[in-house]
Length: 414
Ligand SMILES: [Zn+2]
Image 1 (cartoon, protein in one colour):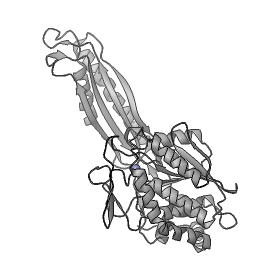
Image 2: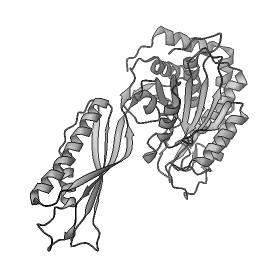
Image 3: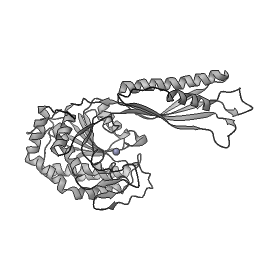
């Protein structure tokens, strides 16, 4: 793709990569790769499904302490946080990797290694980012780099599934002084995620009285029929292709076999809808709620007796947002990937931990996409490519230094 990077960003990457200390740090990341992998193997064997990350958080906090970070703590949400102090003259930059994996607590976690890969559930998503963060701090310490702004390191909880970026949301709510964020998720380089795909996951329960399928017929409205009317209406909704906007009724539940001849008292549906545009997401939200209200009214009027009502439980609610394609942090990621010899690519959408700062107008990118297939979220196949994977912390280092500034050498690109 045709993409031009502004001189300020080009010059910053040139200056940084010309500095001896930065070259030392980049070289160190390659030399430290086997150490980093050993830590990744320790971490991957600590089970950490979403909402059960406590043990990993302790590991990360202890590692942060040993590496000399200050203000190391586990915050109110459960995130492990530590600060590498800057001189105080630059933006405060968050470097994040989520600790949770998608596998249940009892999943066997026995890593197996061959020439090219390490296989284990969770080895890439996102155990890698935790290990990458630690090698990155060692590289900064080894090279003696003094940033202008603080670097805040965080192993975050609740990224996946029903966690819905809850760790990052909790952290950002408590810390209004973050100026930029670099989220690592995965193990490759190339893809740059700079947008937040907004989404909602809801459970709607339709309530009635219920009764016998024959004896009570005509005396009560049927909540299952109301739910079906709602699904039929939702199925006909039209959504824009740009920005990409989608919806899916993913679950429909009512009744049981014992009550096979009963009018159910409740029926529920689950629905997930997403958009790369916040306006479009809100418009779709209003349409879905209209479908549900109308379905309840129609089923109520059909019989004219009791009223069908509904309740909503919200499982996930992530706002949409985007940075400009030429936001300095996006250009910096582009330029740094080019420097590292890979082909950069701007990705469309993507719900990641970066969604939360992006949707609040704070410059943030998520990196980690690229390289060979890692089959994340597949317990039998998930794997981590050993070769070249020191490049992701190298990339994170360059973006973080560009954003925070290096004392006496470079100013922040932000
Ligand atoms: Zn992930």
